[in-house]
Length: 183
Image (cartoon, rainbow, N blue to C red; front, side, top):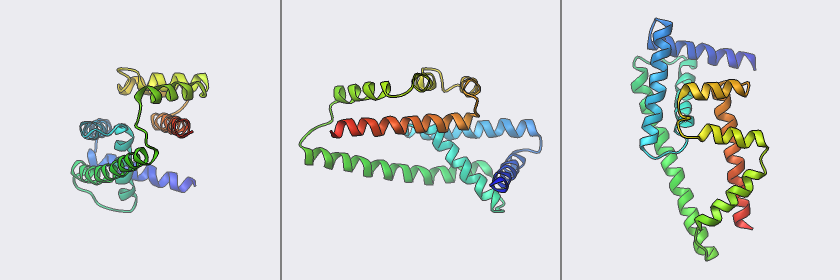
């Protein structure tokens, strides 16, 4: 397990060194690449654009770990982003089609008031610290990297650990809402 972590750390270091030989400049270019990927996905209507941007970077890092030589990291990353976008759009279309079919077979339509009430009830099932985390994470202006880093430090984790924690909480809420709406 440790070697896998070391491999990904080495691959990430290769990614940074490809961006720039100066460590500080490389980190700045990495952050700009990540922000550009987030904007790319946000402008295309994907909700978890920050998580999807991380997925792109993870795939690029895996390529570096596999020994690939990538001359233009930005161009390659946006190629990967385009492919992931196609995957996500296809998946969203399938989910929409399933919801439409479900609505037809149940003879019901999606009621936003019912959905909101289900969400409120499911939020109360979360621990207070989990509720606060979700509210702080998604509060207006919280997309600011410094605020999220501060939030991560408050929760004793890294920024990626925070994203994963929030993603899992969101999935728990989604399952709860779906369960309530299906009963």
